[in-house]
Length: 282
Ligand SMILES: [Zn+2]
Image (cartoon, rainbow, N blue to C red; front, side, top):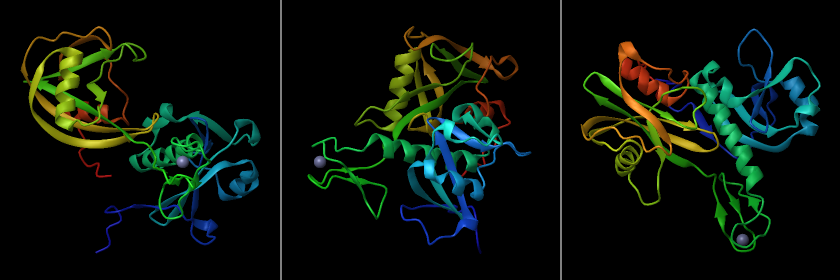
């Protein structure tokens, strides 16, 4: 039986034979996504306009096939697009307006563009790099060093204590928002060790029963969030004062200002609140 959701995206570096009817282009100007102003909230540029503006595109890369559509990424300067039906929106600010697939496709596109931009030269010998024709890699023709897109894993964890959830205010958060404990992995560390270390560093408590929840690429700029649940074990909350300014236990009927939908942080919080949508299988 055909299952469209089992593998809906196949990465690739070699574009198919010319097939304009099924192309979809993700155009960025720095971190801003070019969107057509239509009835829909998020609509990518149509192919006639892509052809019109193609001469201005840089870092053009074939990204892969999403179901029947061939996905491309490119960068353009905002000032080269004079058509008023197009607008550039900060990608991060519109995540909650996208469905999961739209978000993942845009995430792939912007990371391919940034990788292409940031890896022109070999980090080992300084020679200009060449794209591999078989995989997403750049190879140094002089010393052979190979460079793949960088993915930076980070853990995020919902810590529960009975019917309460630990939420913390990070000093880098905009406004008075509270979210979950999260942090980047160190080299040579397991997920579980990272979960325990980050929680101990940031709020000074011990947890147990660490369980995998789900993952989400978070392309700001190249994170991969690996989400867990865990249960409080022992210790008093003691915010580190460096990253975490305040933290506490919150019950469903007493939630502070929490992240918008679209992030895995919010999915974990929704799970805690009992209205989680645990159907994300991407
Ligand atoms: Zn080299």
